[in-house]
Length: 82
Image (cartoon, rainbow, N blue to C red; front, top):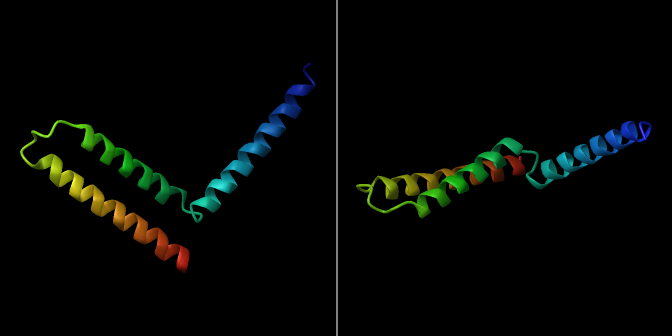
């Protein structure tokens, strides 16, 4: 039983590395930009779910997040093209 643990560990390590590589390929090798994009989308979703009575600040925050999402996407597209 103890002999299987190192083999299992190696397989898990290999699978983790492969998954990381595939995620990197899917994001154009930009994992930080993709993470930022994911977080911005999550924040946008939370603002959508919030009550509307915030003196216009909620709506302004949504607008700014939408702009930030567009900028991150544009940056990723630019980097992928160069």
